[in-house]
Image (tube, rainbow, N blue to C red; front, side):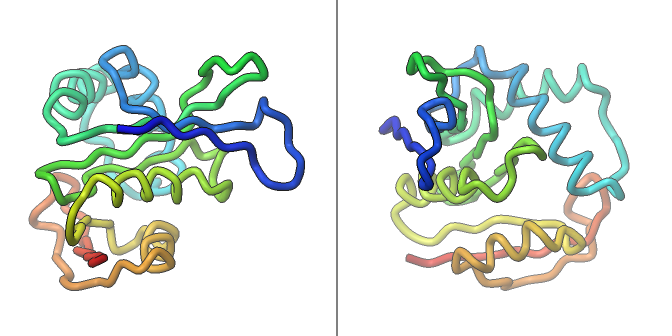
Length: 171
């Protein structure tokens, strides 16, 4: 896996750079924080099914060690050192984007697009993903990136019982 760095266009300083790197077990707490904050901000209608502790255990013992790959986006300081975690993406089963979440305060800066590009670079063929039907912002994001809705579900397949959409992208 490659590590990528970027300084935003428009003359921003190196403090605004973002690095995409493979996640490690040490990222579990920060990934959990991004996951919970993003879901709370983007999907306040979702029922809260699990405690913070259970969510951390799931990220620690399921998502990070069993996903095909997990990448994190982190801010890079002027000293070139990694800093705060801004978002993450997880690939499951070799061809399913299982998670792509960003901190609510860093949306619309190209970070989600960079994480998605990392996922696309790791998959040799089509990619599928599920999005809740009511998550209009996520649906618009994936559609802008060439994903097509291929199936709609009544929510019976997820623990939130929230209707979702299966999207597919083919290179």
